[in-house]
Image 1 (tube, rainbow, N blue to C red):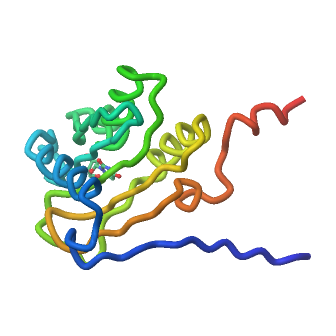
Image 2 (cartoon, helix red, strand yellow):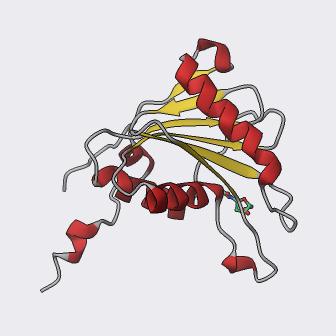
Length: 162
Ligand code: THU
């Protein structure tokens, strides 16, 4: 038996002021999209802003439905919209925010969104940069989608079956 330990790096910023202008702008795009969330059932608004290698920024918000599982998280709304529109552009960064004023720790993407984000990262060279925050306050940054989903399922696994 061998024991393996998986670790990852996370940067914790007290607020936006210690971040690059580009990161501040992406967070601000995500925060301004929060008003467009459709979350009448959970009242938990989430928005994501995706920065692409062609310079475009595509925003998405969570979209709920009376048939609950039919709704979709903000991250996937943003990424699917971005990749439908610009399939050849790489995803450079994604900012994910909630409508809460300030949280003791920012929310992180759900498991299904992590899987989707990682698939796009696997298809491109650069790793994806993450910015996680609320309307203001603490910002977590991460620089690789793999750290959010160790031992993930990928297209390589599909080839393992006989
Ligand atoms: N939600 C997101 O949009 N992104 C996440 O990563 C976690 C959860 C949404 C889904 C649902 O509309 C609401 O937040 C409550 O779960």
